[in-house]
Length: 267
Image 1 (cartoon, rainbow, N blue to C red):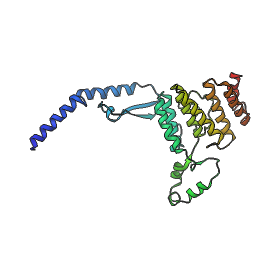
Image 2 (image 1 turned 180 degrees about the vertical axis):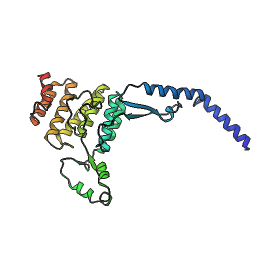
Image 3 (image 1 turned 120 degrees about the vertical axis):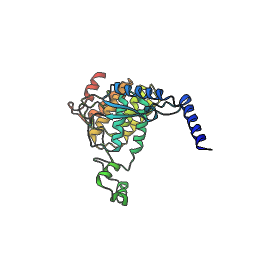
Image 4 (image 1 turned 30 degrees about the horizontal axis):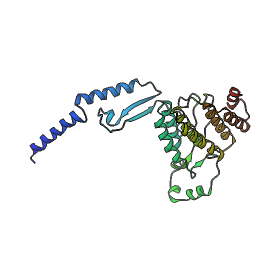
């Protein structure tokens, strides 16, 4: 095949792609502009950027949609990998993208494994064995903490990442696995998936029963409060009342436990 034949074949292929698959140059340009306008008009507390091939103006059958989010502020720089993913899931949840939130939560929960370190939690034999491994002994402390340490989810007082179902007064750190299952419950609740709502509630209850990444009584009191809120949402008031009472038993400070207020609404 000569250079002329190759050039002609390339031009023919280009025209075929423009007319049948990708779109003309003007169509691609128009779609790119439309994406930019939509991103700029999005009324969120963060910047939304349509990216990937669709963001470049190419709308092909079977291609996925990539959207990047740029948070316009930083609530804290003290987050490790898992807590960062959980905060991201809360951000996506606030935009009502429940299925995407569930995907992130599923990935996050896979990282909440028993070998992770947790504040106020005694080291187990597994932890001692891990920390004696050569790869961890040579790892810088900051990187080691990011890799092994699991932190609570700590919202600022005026945080816009906090789910609306939790009162603004609740500024206490939330155990990570408890928060993940609670957010799962909220997603399934809004998706009207009754079966998964029950399953996520069972996961949340099991987390409390096993004290899974719940270090002390104050965290458990907050966890029972969250369980009570969950039952209250589905109008299971008997179970909600029981959960709030367990929260109060663990943390009887009426100025520092919203379970008192919640309990007054259903008593």
